[in-house]
Image (cartoon, rainbow, N blue to C red; front, side, top):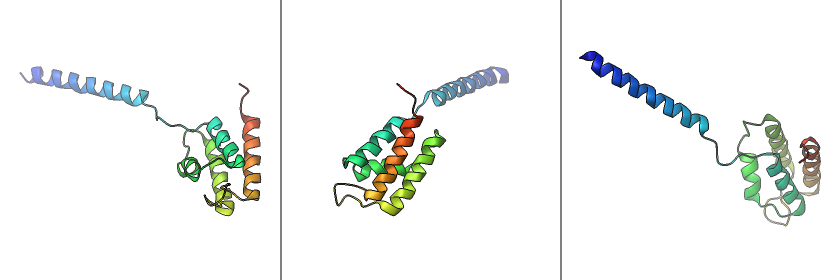
Length: 115
């Protein structure tokens, strides 16, 4: 009698575990920043088209899945601390900040594979 209860219970737990494992393996975040997103943002900053909210989306969340991009994000945060002007004018950063961000964009372009 006990065996008739234990076997279906174990089978149900095993099935539940397999389904959970599959769902966790297949789930992908809906928004992942990649090098092209960062380049687009840096180009928008240089041209005065970037909004402060766009900048915050990039800088506020660590990029754990790409250490190289996270290092760039941290460099951009350091530039933000020293050179951010905010939304008051056409540019988010002063001239020196835009120059430093343009250098980062050039480095990122040099590392990006040719399409």
